[in-house]
Amino acid sequence: MNDKTDEKPDEHDLAINLAAPRSTRRQFLKGLTTGTVAIGALAQSGCAPAIPPLKTRGATNTTTVCPFCGVGCGQVVSTRAGKVIHIEGDPDHPISEGTLCSKGAAGIQVVNNSRRLQKVLYRKPNGAAWEEKSWDWALERIAARIKETRDKTFKTTIDGRVVNRTEAIACLGGSALDNEEAYLLVKLMRAIGLVYVEHQARL
Ligand code: SF4
Image (cartoon, rainbow, N blue to C red; front, top):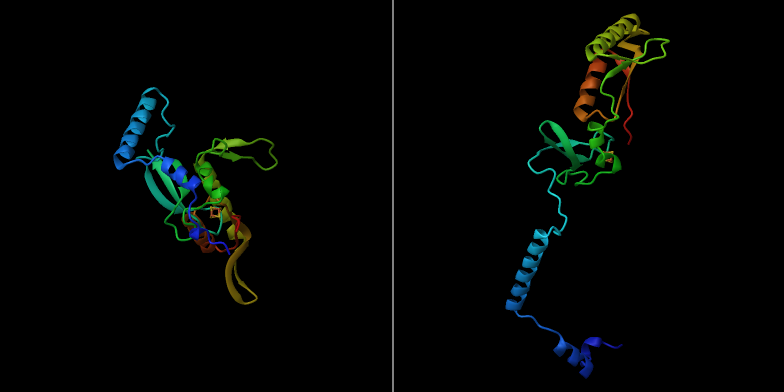
């Protein structure tokens, strides 16, 4: 077996090593200074490296959990003047350690999206057109319809067993609900006797 560490350098190798420039500490520092001056000159001439300012500088950072699926990755939400300006993975989160899948990484689009519906649209039974309504109108109507349906269909017992439920109403949660909203929603639905409670977030 040929062990190269035991070989003696030949004359060619020695010539190359002797010819190689060896900088002193002083020359190294001098080079650094020259480089800094060169970058400064480039900056003054408008050719500085393109380093954009950090967009989250001065923002308030709040940790939360990605609402899209049951993995529950951690996110940091940056806000400024009451507006969400950035969402990224939370490096301190024990499950995801700063990583997010494409859905979580695009989470800011749930908040800032020109295509997101901002107003209540109502289409009356057998109607063909959508009408814009106020939230007060919609919430009053939803509450009245839930009460009416629950009152008509509520069962206290079935086959002698206490059930206290209605099977005429169902609740479907959505991915844009965060953990706390989903918790409150289920609490409310169970309190009024729903058994059909589902959520469309994937896992
Ligand atoms: S949707 Fe993606 S980022 Fe969000 S919790 Fe699930 S895996 Fe994590």
